[in-house]
Image (cartoon, rainbow, N blue to C red; front, side, top):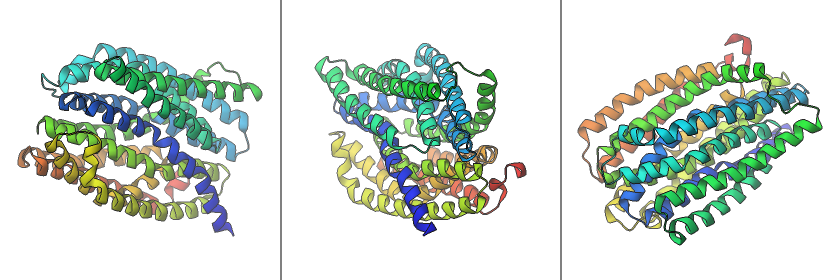
Length: 440
């Protein structure tokens, strides 16, 4: 009976989280599909700019990943006002960081794109997309914090509703701005930014109303913000290692030419979509593990972990099989270029083979985040990156700039790098240290 109760709790959080998590990659899929038919240079430009943009966004994901377990642990302790205060501080931190990053990103868009090795043909599209995505960057960080509050409160259904509405608005806006007003990649960035701000405003209203109804001041507690920053610094290092790995991959594929870069952008967008889908279980893990440890129930946390690991690996097998079957036809959705289609097909077959590993990795990542084991995650991330860089260098100096070269690059990423992550996370999960805060 207890096992059935665990299953219901996991599904209650994971199923809505799945829909909410795929909103961002759906934004990217829609952008890629709309921009892809403008031309290879435009698609490659969006791909390059997206890599830079996602580095900034990815580093700030700690706003959700630190807020969720903090709120969940307070809920487990039976202290709702404390939970809401932690959420409020997360929102304020998101706003301050978002404004600073947006101003810096708009000013430095050109040098950042040049640093990524953009060709003269690709550069103007990459710069335009990056600059006009900056308003949406602020909104994205607010969305991170807002969803973190609701997940910690064990509510993943509301983010699903907000994300669904935002995705629908994003498609309509982008089609109108890109083709209706002929704004090219700028229209795609502006449309996405508008949709993201609409979502962010919904979260701001919800967090403020919840805080007010429980007597929590809307003004920031600077001590709480500093505490959130300290916890988030380890998670930022963990995320930095992931983003450096992805950016280094983009640098290698850029040297392979515009065709492989365009195909890589599509493959990475699909990987992100599947990663967020697999991460639905990780979000459930963050909320449930945080709550159980807050309530001093480590045995229950261990049982939940084993269950979610089985589910994650199994789901990876399913998504891998579906992706392998769909790979030969996926390219037609995004581009008419035969070279891009061939390179994408090979990359997707490699990606499909790595999906079971990815399912295992994402679940354990969520478990350790929920447990507050941020320091270990940061150190493991650096170790994994040290393993991955030699693989990338081998591809850079031995693989050709053709479809097979992109396949080798994806083998290094989705098989080699993800396997390293699985090993370091699995070794930690076998111990009891992540269950006991004082032992870290």
